Length: 282
Length: 285
Image 1 (cartoon, helix red, strand yellow):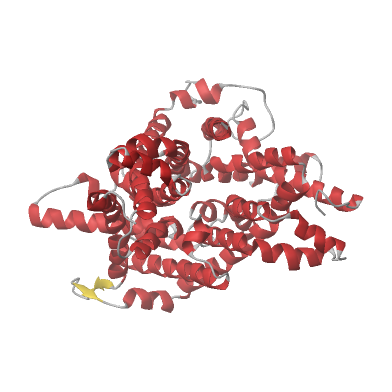
Image 2 (cartoon, chains in turn red, purple):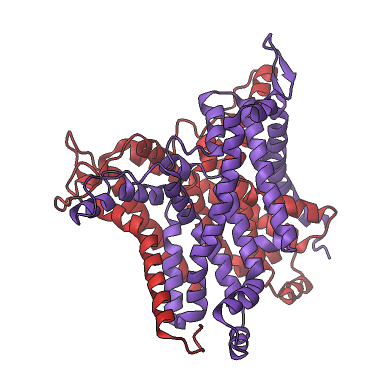
């Protein structure tokens, strides 16, 4: 049954077999995607026709590898920029929210806290369309009243940033709050007794204490933004992010270049995951 | 206790209020308002119930809605059934070090974009896919079969995408459970099924609730997986919303659909929280 109890052979064997099958199920699609990125065939399918790096580096009439594929490279760059701004913004506002809800007492605190958690349980598609509606409404109003044309309010890079920020901030808030709860307030009291101001205490004592949580939340916020699809789909303008761009390609048929991009993403995110684990251990 | 007086409070309150008002509260009010707007015969904007009447009047809409709700429930249940043994194995059965490794392996695929994972399933399952290739060369099939674009594959894909969000709360609940509870039940002669239903399940009920809420919400709101694996006849309600917004450009109708989906998702979460006597704050942390 469990470690400390004796168990019969068939139970252990059956359980072990299930675990093996589960991990096979878990990794099969990723492994196949990676392997076929190196197949010397024009379609991402078997049979194996030999090893090639064409889908990464080639620049012939039939084959353009990812490193030469301007459209995909641009969308990767757009996703990087989006993720950078989203993680920065949500880290700042999420941390402020953690201070607000953990350390301040004010009226309607419970209600506001509930509202701050809501974005994580609102389907991403709904967030996308409702922000699109509001931005569009505000844009029309400004144009009619003042003749202003605000790019931010049309589907665009910054609208995507705002849309992703709207729910990733809640995630940051939860992670930072969890760490802030463990903060020993006597440290803060000591600093206040010695004449430090509130902001000095936060900057010199509380933020360094929060650092692991801030790094962890920042990394996950970056990844959440980088791979967001549902909310982005409705807010994206001419600067398509990588997931939206890949979706359009996958929907219309596929080439091994998509495998090559997937391979790079899998390697990149695995490295990031290992790094964050390494930091957490220390 | 409030520290640092008013200044500190406002410094933190203002950005948080701006975030919640401008990006959450006002957009959702707009969504609700838009869903009750429409045009009369002369093209003038008016208040109307037409968008909701359309929803209930046309069976394709409400059938898709009901279908999405039922399938999302099924996916939530299946996700629990598939991940529970793994969570149990990692926390209670495997040797401690080995369990840590299995946990890292379990989390890793979910750091990769959902699109990449769905794409992986597409090249495995399609007519010219890898699985067909193996079945043909083993002589199990005479000609390739299309495994994509049906409900079973779509549900499998949704379960695959959701597993992490069930596994993490289950594992943390199981980690908090003292092994001696199971040992005591075993010593008193309880069978495995009794231990499972009478000891383990009640103990990890809060974890099951958290996992189910998140999985249900994400499945209901998923667009990518039903769209790419489900094909034409597997309509998912988010696809209807997308069609109204992007293809038909009927934002009022789309807003009504969006609001109905939001209502369904919130109702399920509320019921889940009431049944397990939890609050949203405790469930998410």
